[in-house]
Image 1: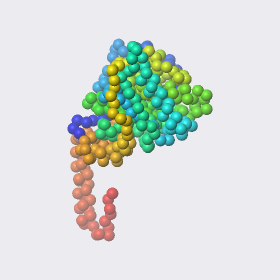
Image 2: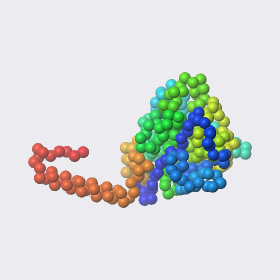
Image 3: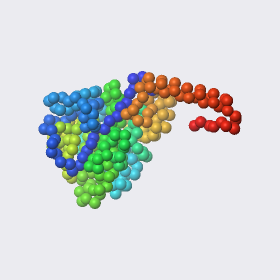
Image 4: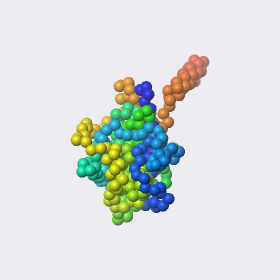
Length: 318
C-alpha cells in the first residue's frame, strides 16, 4: 500500500423516480460533491446560503476525460440488448457534453469501451486502473452501502482518495426491481433515458441540486426525454469550463479494472496501490500491524500443535 493512499466510497445518488416533490427545500442551485454527503444518511454541516454540504474534502475528477463500460447481461432484466443499454447511456452523456456554456460545450470527453465482463461493482486500489461501469441489479445490499427502497431508480457509488477528494471510480446500479415493474409502460425507454442522464451527472461529479426544477434534484418526476434545466447546465459548465481542447488517451479496459485478483497482481508487480475488497472499510496501518501479529501468533500455536501430533493426525490448514 502506498504511503498516504486511502480510498473511501459512498453513494451520492438515491434517484427516486415518480416521487412527489413536496417538502423539498427552496431552489438554491447545484451543489458540488463533498466527502460528507447528507443524502447518503450522513450528518453533515451545510453552507447556510446554499444548503449544500460543506464538510470534508470537495470531490472532483482529475480531468475531463471519462471512460465507461456496461456490464454484460445488463440489458436482460430490462428486456433490452446490452448494446441498447449502452446506447441509452451514451445519449445520456452526450446530453451533458453538449450543454451550452455561453456558446461553447463543457470541457469533457466521454467515451465507451462497450460491454465488459463485470459481475459486481469493483474498485482497484491502484487509482489509474479503474473503469466506471453500469449495472442493472437489485438494490438489496444489506451493508447499508446501497438503498433498498423499491422506488429508487438507481444509485451511483463513487470511490475517492480521502486526502485529495479525487474520484477514481464511479459505478452505477440501475435498480432491476424498479425498472422490471415498468417494462410494459409505453414510456419505459424515455423514463430510463432520463434516469440515465441523472446518474451520468453523478458520474461526472455532480451532487444533488437544491433546485426543484433541476434534473439533478434528489427526487424528481421522471418524464420522457427530460432536458437539462438551467441549473444543471450551470453545474456542468462550472465543474468543467469550456477549453480549447481536451486531450485524452485512447480508451481501454484491463482485467485489473474488473476483478480483485488481476488488480492485486498489478499492484504487486508495480509495488504500488492498495488492494482492497471493500473501500468503505479500509484498515488503517496500525490495524494491519495488529492483524499480522495475530496471524503470526496463530501460526506459531498451530506449529506447536502439529509438532506434538502424530503424522496421521495432522491436518492441512488452508
